[in-house]
Image 1 (cartoon, one colour):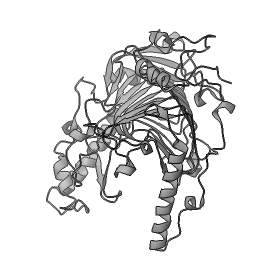
Image 2 (tube, rainbow, N blue to C red; image 1 turned 135 degrees about the vertical axis):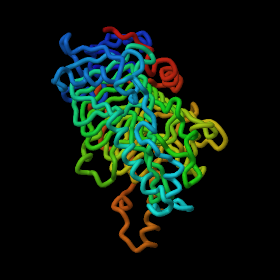
Image 3 (tube, helix red, strand yellow; image 1 turned 45 degrees about the horizontal axis):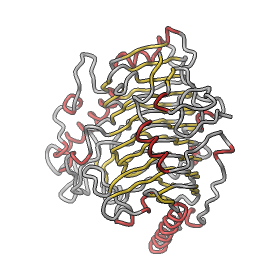
Image 4 (spheres, rainbow, N blue to C red; image 1 turned 60 degrees about the vertical axis):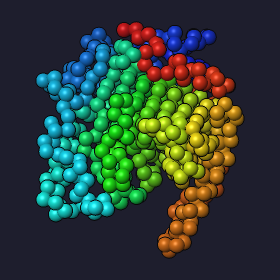
Length: 471
């Protein structure tokens, strides 16, 4: 079993008998994940043991990609130290590329106009420029992908050397890899200049292409003391779309998809974002995700996240000692629950998910703030919480999850009857707090027992810059 540590006190291994506060800790390149799902099985230590020739210090995108290639041995153990900020849009000549560099002549206002006055149907004939705008949008998106995508291979540790070391405008992808560690990094989500308007997605929706960090069909990942945010580019400053709302230029902050497994996300700070953390990419993907997506969220700070913190399908997910905050009247990222007519939530229980929530502290302020924001059911009927708090007081998340599931089930049954089609399978299930697993049976850990301790840890000891990096 993994070493027992207080949740949030995820430092180095082996653990001392009495763990010191996180802020006084040290990050070393050979540290393994001390607890959570990443510590199960083969464990997760990234590039531990890498020889001197496979330990790099990088400060530009080209240097980073060369280090990841590791002299033709990309999956051999390697450690990469990031010094300063690496821009995913930085060309080889040092220029920072923008929309017109990727697709000269593209105009999002012209693109939108080609869906017609109601924003419902695209036609190349709506205006004489529509065909060209369609082609430019696709070409620009593909050009941007080739530029900003950074693929992290197996047996890799990436560590930021300073509080602001990390990435802006990059699309970090862990693709078909195993044993990857990301620590002490600041990551600003990439802006998708070529986000697409999808009129048939609900009442119409924007769908950006690029995540800040994502994992696809990978396993044994440890993400620790990382900051992820929209940063300088909040979506409410984007051009307005056909629905009268700003275009969504960001996709996920930290998405785990297509059978990703054995992941610990600890001591990290995620803030100011809409579609935050998605586990699994569709209810139909049981072949890819069934029995996988085992993820632990330990001692993180989730601030002003409008939804998906996380939204889980299929996975056995442990959410412990995290601090969730937001406001109904935040000027950039307001949180509006279903009870208020919105779609914001923190924990999303999706199809076949099995979430074990434990001693999390939720704080929501502003007019109409209500505890239903803590958890919403999206076809998920198995959820259990132990000892969490809302605005400093004990909260009954199980009752909220049950009510959400039963409300959505009632709606789905009524829609099926009205349309004459069979109701989905999940409408035949009953809500239960028996999630079929207990984290204590899988790995050792110790949780903070007061909301003050959870909040204090989040405010003082999460994100990059609170630990000393030892090279």
